Length: 427
Image (cartoon, rainbow, N blue to C red; front, side):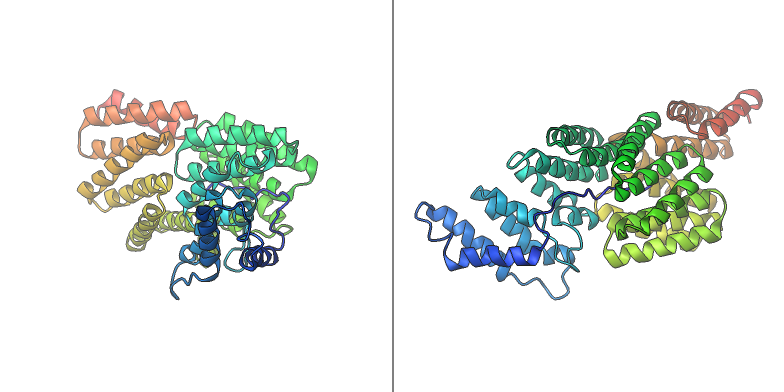
């Protein structure tokens, strides 16, 4: 399930990015910077390199968006080397539609280049003011969250929240609370997740912050969906989509449609599920929203698996796995492996399915994904039952029951039923 990342609103020093960038380059080229008598030869070389990267770098004609912004990334690091933090911040916030429809540091996350976004944030945190630190730490936390580095993300969000409070920016603090809630959701700590998201929603409502309200409603939908309350989730997602008509945000629309399609699928409404998911996939591909694309592919695969269109389902699972491994998104990778394995079991491809389950459990253990692990153990119990291995079935069912009870999800009821039957009848 894709987290809805709030694109926090704040005073953007790059409100007219192209004009400011041109002015910056002009100042350096005309000599007002390079002729500074106090400038060391090394610093002068960094300034020249920054200008060259921004003016002379030519990416390949068929290059990716990441290659197209390489000049700005290299220039950013050169400005950091000479401790020109103000100029570096201009590149950090750079928007140049259509290539950069959002600030550079956030657009990198949309493209799935979390490491580059983290590098930008790491270099500039602590160099300007509290409000800037809150923004950079929040983006850094978003990157770690996508990489399933959950404790690191929690620590960063807490630091960002403190900086937002110190800068007396309650709106910024509210958005960070919503992100913090999304981490606890991924850790299966739903009560804590709901507490943070609802607190963020209260702040957003008080300040009339529509983007934050949309994000909060979407994240509350994610929580309800994980708890098995799919009708409540659909209501929340649709409420968020209605608000989105007033605050156009392509990436948020991708996420909402993807999660709404997943909820429809859980309710057996495959027609609406496919409609939402195809639209989500279309928007994700057009905007190069890699995480959103992964989620749409995974949910579509699940729908086709439910419809017993196994060939198409497997092709979509494989596309999803290829992409999620490319962007290093272990949470979605573990979910895709679990769901692919279930389809392979249905096709009686047991060795291949067991390999997927094993890979999935390794990832779950590494990132703390107890939610998916619970489903893996439940599925393994059912495989063991078919193989007439009651001992293994009992072991796997115990593990599934333990995790699902800890998470307080509806799967616990199914696991208890299987466990009771194992005890009474021994299959």
